[in-house]
Length: 448
Image (cartoon, rainbow, N blue to C red; front, side, top):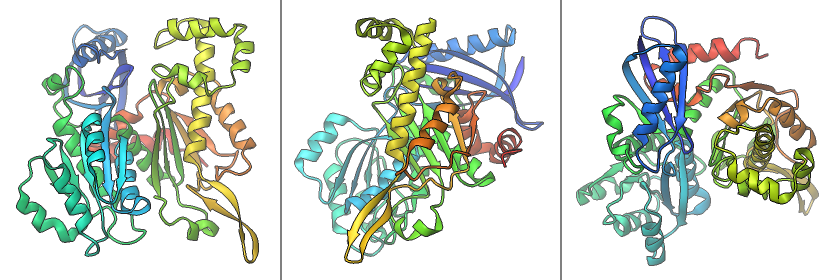
């Protein structure tokens, strides 16, 4: 069988391969294969197994494809450290750009990097170091001195600080350094897109950390970007089609929330410093690698009663149930842990209404991201897609939060039925209009 494109999603738990035709017709999803990610040995083994599963599902013996794209969050995904001038300004802007590109942030510093920070960076061994700091033609020494501090660590770097430093940084001729536009050129101006694009490019060039990733380009002949970044790309396109979007992605290791939303007009003046599109990643909320951590944040009594098991039996179930649950009680347990992941991740992502006392009396003001104008929620990731009633639980959550800046209970909730949001995101880097038409036809019709 001949197809146009394969897209591999190499996750921390599973490797998925999706097949598409799109060259001579509108984008069409053909089928999927999956396998356990073989990060402990060689990720290409899991990738080959997923392709074999795809052929089995399509009932074919041979498969030829013209292009293969990929997303990856294997080996801990994309690890980044961020170093700016002021935490709530340049450092925060760089952090938001990195999160939007799909990174896991392992260290954020403000002001001058010291020897203790250098020791932390060496221990973390990030894939990329981001140096920011100073508005354009403002303070320039901190970002320049920080660059000098880390330039000999043999780690790819991106400079996204004060433009006034560009010439003297170029004179340093630093290996594996990319210079991009300032991520914070003016006060309260988040210029995220150039840094995000550079993170993608650097990731593609240096993603050799998981075992076998050094061989991945023997199979992949196009883009490979972080999986969460790909989901954000799809979220951004959905927002272009119908503004006000929230995407929830519960995975085996983390839970990611992506939102693209303008604040309510009455809250606009309080929203400075909050990006319009935002991603949060919760490293303690995952339904396979972090099952035990999620259990400890759940209502254990309710879980024990629902399953009819005691604490020891539930702990035994967590240890023995495979990455895709095989028993009925295992499925029930993962569904309940998924609910905890969604609730906790939303709590951390969404802003609050807070009471403050002024000389004119008490006022209620927003603090954090305002999602009250979100019109559509999209669910992706195997845990959400296999949970038959997760939409009802999300509505219950929305109905009980009186102090959160949450969407209305009447928000539309859609599932990424074919589990292809990440695949569509990486495809959109090359075939955006085809992806946009597919999303419009699949998820936007009748949304109102």
